[in-house]
Amino acid sequence: MGKSGPKPKKIINEKWNSNLAYAIGLLVTDGCLSNDGLLIDLTSKDREQLLNFSKCVGINFKIGNKRNQKGDKCLRIQFKNRMFYDFLFSIGLTPKKSLTMGKLNIPEKYFFDFLRGCFDGDGTFYSYWDPRWRSSHMFYIEFVSASKKHIEWIREELNNKINVSGYIGKSKKNSAFQLKYAKKEALEIIKKMYYNHSVVCLSRKLVKIEKALKTEKKQQKKYLIK
Image (tube, rainbow, N blue to C red; front, side):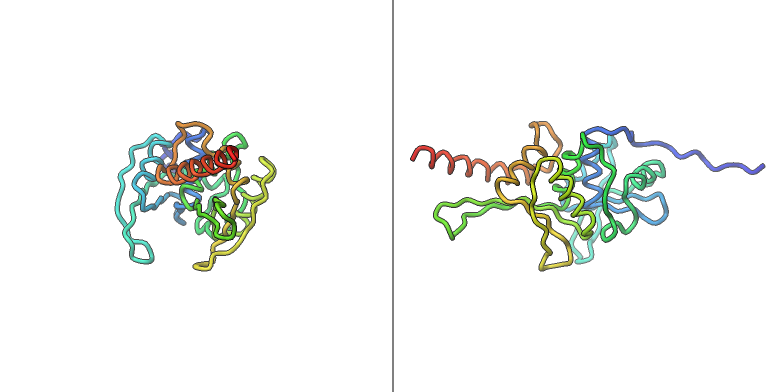
């Protein structure tokens, strides 16, 4: 009778909670799985992003350096663990996921924590004064994926959960799909993602959102006074 190999070691608790869901959102956007069934990689230009991931999974990972395809300097976490790799695979992540990913098995209770991770990883928020109408302040929130199936799944989930529609476009710079929500719908998503002040998030994106919402509040107050 031959000897069996070493039993896989669990290093990350796979019990669902808000932090795990957020960490998976980061992996869905900025991470990748290797073909060997072991290696997990998370790459970002934001050190805070990688520190947030470490905090959420409860491991103080070493942060290394790498160059992306454009030659820009980035930071990354790499680690090997078959049990966590298999868990990620079981919920819908795969090697070379960017073009093939579709629906993910995220518990409904933690969907907006997951979505906040996706937003911090590959999302965008921007605001501006619309020149077509005097004193018209606009803002948008956007989610990005190279997989149309995945971005359509996010749109469907948001529509079912909070009745927002948004629209899907395509980036002029690359082949990525962009799911955009304007003002009223964006605000509903923001309230769900940032449901209290203690949620883990990328601070620079939250600051940008808070600044736009303060401007919006002042604008609304101005019209109420009139």
